[in-house]
Length: 209
Image (cartoon, rainbow, N blue to C red; front, top):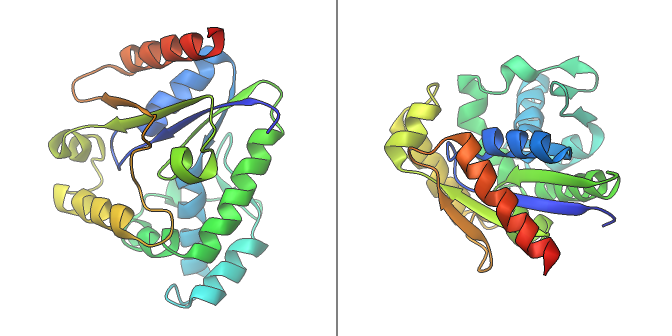
């Protein structure tokens, strides 16, 4: 890995994407939304009629698709950005994200992306601090109350967000968990700017020591 990485994990609605995007912009670094990658695979697999419960078929499908996450998410050149949070994808993404073959392929791509950036990358997801970049420059775990997270994800109910939490934390392949050395921040009632400032100060401390 040739550049610095700030790895951000946390459950759905904890503010990962908003914080990570703002942090990357503040630092002048690249940004990678790994959740968008899993959603892109899920949506495209559904569109192609792939049986999501066929582990090998979905794994092979994920290995064959080309995914671009910026400035908008596309799969094989087709813009899918506005499809990522459809009800269909919301209900199916946990199945795809739990597939170890898919995760292995996405982790490889995520590491390759970060290694190719000239300065640094802010990467957010659910296994970034524990699996993808266990030696990241700074590790962050964001959380928030269930009520707050459901409010932020106005396309999902509290029950839906809670189901995702259970699926993410209990799956066998790279479950969501807090890294022992992560900076834990509760974003409930806090502005994105405030959270970014705290992470930036942590980065300064880590890189100056």
